[in-house]
Amino acid sequence: MIISLLVVAFLPFLLFLGLYLKSFLLIHDYSIIDLIFSKVWRPSRGQFGFYPFIVGSVWVTILAMLISAPVCLLTAIYVTQYTRKWFLRIMHPAIDILAGIPSVVYGLWGILVIVPFISEYLGPWFGVKTMGYSIIAAAFVLAIMIIPFILNILIEIFRAIPTELKEAALSLGATPWQTIKHVLVRKALPGIIAALGFGLARAFGETMAVLMVVGNVVKLPKSVFDPGYTLPALIANNYGEVLSIPKYDSALMFAALLLLAVSLFFNLIMHFFIVKYNKF
Amino acid sequence: MRLSRKIEECFFKVLMILSTCFILLILAIIIYSIFEKGIRSMSWEMVTRIPEGGYYYGKGGGILNAILGSLTLAFGATILAFFLGLPVALYINVFLIRHKKLVGLIRFLLDLIWGIPSIVYGAFGFSLMVFFGLQTSLLAGILTVSLFILPIMIRSMDEILRTVPIGLQEAAYALGSNKSETAFRIFTRQSVSGIITAVLLSFGRAIGDAASVLFTAGYTDNLPNSLLEPVATLPLSIFFQLSSPVPEVQARAYASALVLTLIILLVSLFSRGVGKRYHKTKINF
Image (cartoon, rainbow over all chains, first blue to last red; front, side, top):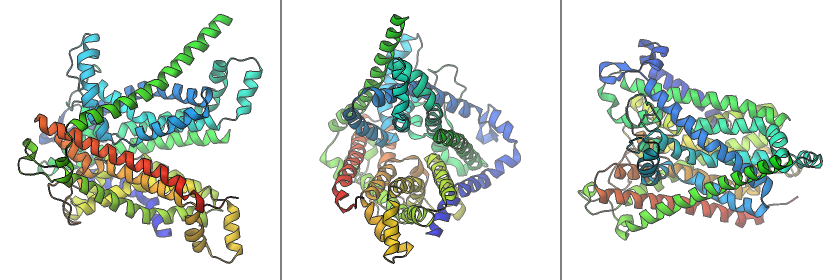
C-alpha cells in the first residue's frame, strides 16, 4: 500500500523531472524568454519560437471560457435555485454523457457542424471570408467540452450553500434574483473562480478536438476567424518526425513542460480558492 | 424602481432558461449528428473485419483491429490502475484516517495530477520510450494510459470510501480484525458499487483518450496479439480516417465514432445500473 502511495505521490515530480531533463538540451542553448517570445518557428534551421503557439493557445482558451463561463453559471443557478429536484435528475445524466464523450468525437462533431456553420453563416455575417477551420471554431468546440466539467463543480458549490442564507435574504424582501446576485453569488465567489480556473486549465491542455478544427497554421492570428495553432496540437502533430531534426524532440518536450507548468500553476492557485471557500 | 426590478428578474430568468436549453440542445445535436452520420456508413463489415489492402483508399475491410485494440488497451490500463489505485485509496481512508493534514495533502496532490493534460503523459511516455530504446507497443500504451487514469480512479474510489462510517471501522477493530483486514474485507465490501463505478468511469476515460496513446501505442492494421507490438485504437482510427481525402474513408470515420460513442454510452449506463444493484450488500447505520 505504501509503495503504491509513494508511486502516485511522486508522479508529478517524476513527470516534471523527466520532461525537464529531455528539454534541457533546448533550455541550455537558448534562454527561456527567447524561446517563449520569439516568433520564428523553423525547426530545420534551429529556430524555435513558441510565441505563435502560446498566443494560439491563449486565444482559444480565453474565447472558450468567455462562451462557457456565463452559460455554466446561469445554468448552475437555474437548476439549483429555480427548478425542482426531478429536473436535476434529468440534468445529471445529460452532463455525464457530455463529459463522457471522447475528445475525438467532439473534434469530429466540430468538423461536421461547427466548421461549416462558421464558414457559411458566421463568417459572412461578420463580412469575413473564412475556411471555417479557425480559432473561433476551436474555441466553440472547446467551450462545449468544458461545460460539463465546470457545470458539475458549480452545481456542487451552489448546492452546498446553506438554505438559511437564502431564506434570510428572501425574508428581508429581496427578490429571488437579488438574493442570487447579492447573497448566493457573493458567497460562492471563491468556488466559482476555482471552478472556472479548473476549466481553464483543462481547456489549455485539450489536444485532439482542438487539433482537428483549429487549422494548424503557424502564424500569429490576426482575428478569431484566422486559423491558428496550439501547444498541444504542436506536440501531437510533430511527434513522428522528431528524430530526423536535431533538438526537435527537446523542443516538443519543452512544449509539454510548458503545458505541465501552466496546468499545475492554475490548479494550485484554484485549490487555494477552494480551501478558502470551505472555510466560510 | 419596482418595474426595473421586475424586468431584471424576468430578463435573468429567461437568460437562465435559455442557457439550460442551450446545453440540452447541444447534447441533442451532438448525439443526433453522430448517430445520423454514423448509421449511414455503418455496416456489419465495419465491425467484424480488419482493414484489407487499400482500405485507406476506400476498399473493403473494417475497424475490428481498432475496436479490439481499444478494448484490450483500456482493459489492461484499467486493471493496472485498479491494482495500483485501490491500495492507495484504502490506505488513505483506513491507515491515515487520523492524520487529517497528510490526507488533505495527498488529495491535493491527486487533484493536481488529475489536472495534467493527457498529451503531457503521452509526451512523457514517449520520452521514456526513446530513452529506453523501445518501439511503440501495447505495453507502453497500457502503462501511459494507466498513469493517466490513476488519479481519476483513486479520487473517485476515495470519495466513496470516505463515506464509510467510522463506527463500522471501530466495530471491526473491536472484533479483533487488524487494519488490512478492515480495509480489504470491510471497506471494500461496503463500497463495492462505488468502486465498480470508479472503475467504469476510468475505463471510459481510458478508451476515449487519444492524445496519450498517439505517441505510445502506435497504430497497426493487425489484431492485437502481443504486448510488445503496436496496437490500433478507436480514437486514432477515427482521427486517421477523417484526415483522409477519400469520402468513403471519411464516412467510415463517422461509423467508427458511432462505435466509440456507443461503447462509452453503454459503459456509463452500465455503471448506473451497477450502482443500484449492489446496494443490497451495504450495511446501513
